[in-house]
Amino acid sequence: MKNFLFLVLIFIVINSLQAQQEVNQKLDTIGIKNNRNMISYKLILEYGMSTGIERYYYKWQYGEEMGVAFSWQGLSLTAINNISFKDRFLLGIGGGLEYRSFFIAIPLEIGATCFLNFRYYFNKPAKMVIPMLNVAIGGRMVKEYDFLANKGKRFSEMLYGVHSTFGAGFKVKRFSLQSGILFWTKGYNLYGIDAMVKVGLTF
Image (cartoon, rainbow, N blue to C red):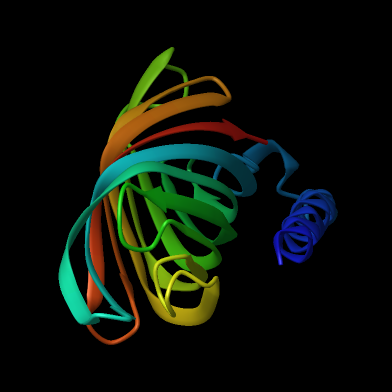
């Protein structure tokens, strides 16, 4: 599962870089090379870390249990394809991989996300440090590995849910840093809220 998701992410990144070259070539062809900063293509790669809480539910030999678990390690790697307007408004589609482990309940989950992304940079591109807002909403597909269910036997299940983030930070040239809130769901009654930090690189 992990190898397959990793290959999917590599495929997305390679195709995104090729798309960036094709878009810039088309802009040159139609004669707006000098105004490329009006409308352009941007590829953003981001690595994120998060920690938070989740509402969990599982079955085991003593019955059913529901409660709150603390997520001590959440990791994500995403690639976002954006159309940039004047290098201040960015609208894009992103996808990536995520990993999360917990103190109790579901010890491990691995999955993929797909989302719409909106970014706004407050200062003009000529500024060195540019404050930014970042909002994303989409879906997620995760596979849980539950070692507490079925009398201690390993159990896995595929679940689907919502993936949404709101962050604020700054950009310096190609590098960006942001912090914010990650809200996610899985299944029909499970959800979590994380505090997150992301670093990014823009191409």
